[in-house]
Image: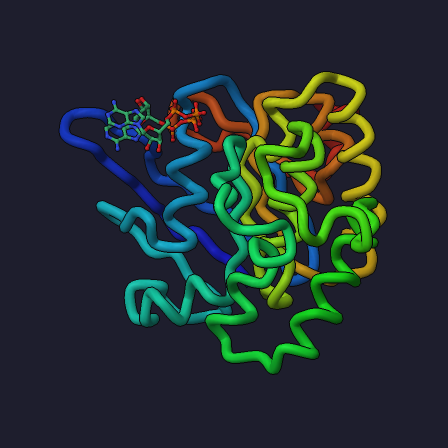
Length: 227
Ligand code: ADP
Ligand code: ADP
């Protein structure tokens, strides 16, 4: 579904990633793990073309991303970041409906989808639909962010430290909830974290980064057995 082939990204004189290759199979979760500054976020941004490669190729469903219209590409890719950037002047329901509206869905279909996702994320719609992000806790805002990213059934979901700003208990709750919905949604997921525990819990495959390189790419089981 997503393939990096010998990808290098250079910013000025900083080599952010060098000669990175890995492949993410459809419907699986791949976690990029490693310390701060080792190129995880850059790798993510190369998928939805917030950045373009200096060398090498990123393929999306077999096509070089450089040959895909950026707007079209991004409509199929949900993006969740740590400080999620919800629209504070828009209600929870309006936030979640953003991409379905852009896609021109009928309003009844949008309403049904919003309610379905809020339920899935443990935010009862009758209570939360019409609230505004500043009225919510950090964990609730992050749930809305995940619901928004999933709203239009993206083929791919990029999650960059999605639970990183949360206290440990809320974080563990969200990880568990996300594991549950993951099995229902069949979305291909790239997940960034600097926590190896989170990587082992969330990933079907784990790419371990060390200063711009993928030093190990394997299943959690094999990584535990051959560290
Ligand atoms: P992370 O939480 O992944 O460690 P960073 O703090 O490295 O994030 O980067 C945050 C944002 O700032 C990213 O969007 C990244 O592209 C940008 N950024 C990081 N380093 C630099 C830099 N040296 N110059 C300009 N922008 C940078
Ligand atoms: P991570 O997500 O693992 O923290 P990043 O991909 O954000 O790492 O950054 C990798 C390296 O690239 C870091 O040295 C960072 O400072 C640098 N970097 C990231 N974005 C930019 C940018 N926009 N301009 C310059 N340097 C950047």
